[in-house]
Length: 188
Ligand SMILES: [Fe+2]
Image 1 (cartoon, rainbow, N blue to C red):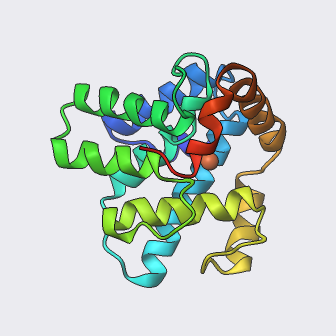
Image 2 (cartoon, protein in one colour):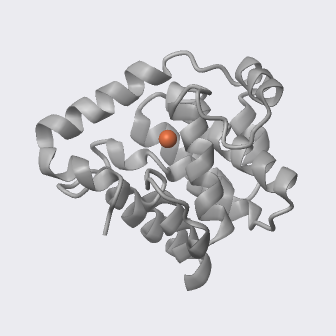
């Protein structure tokens, strides 16, 4: 069974996983699902190592949704991280989350490519940003994650297909909403 199924035990987690599978079009255990799972587990590990309190379900749901703005089912002409934010707001509100948790998850999605620390928006936001940085740099930036942890994670949840998947998404963004690309790192 894909690791994601073990992680997603709440209705919100299940719904977010369903969205990853639907919008990415890959079905269970696709490259984007595995990337999102690694981001969640990296953020969790960073929280544990640094003793920072987090809302685990917010990290889980934001981690699953964070790149879905890349896909046609969620994309508009906005920056893809902003489309991801709006998707998170719609879905998590529909699941009955209170406004503060929706906002925290939406911030984590929208600000995951910011170039500066985001602690002021919440631990979840900054830890997700760091976790994604480890992933997109392919471990060049470890952001406090021990290398053996990441190696083990890549064995459990392989990267296969991740780079072509992201390049496809960014290629579509470049063709269809080029003006939005610079706002990935500084939305809003
Ligand atoms: Fe990502």
